[in-house]
View 1: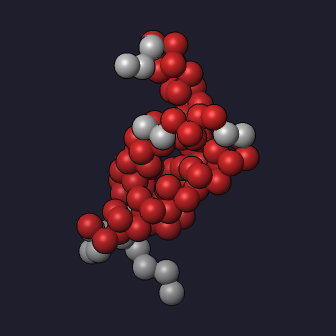
View 2: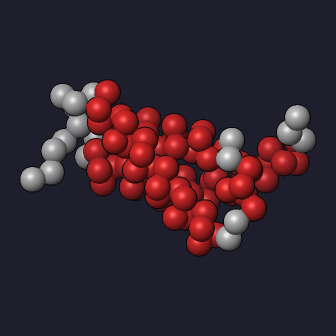
Length: 87
């Protein structure tokens, strides 16, 4: 069980990467609603990754980018008509 202080600490760490995650997702999707959805899913995944919270800020940022890219691609595949195409 997560203690309330752990929950608060996790929330604070994830808050630091919230905007960055959205920016990564928006860059790939070029759709505000889809980017928000992808970023939220990515942050939810990171929340459950206890190792994420034991690494350096640099590694956390890299992991945030990686997970946001993954969820952006998954979101794009779920809504191919809404997501923008680069080309």
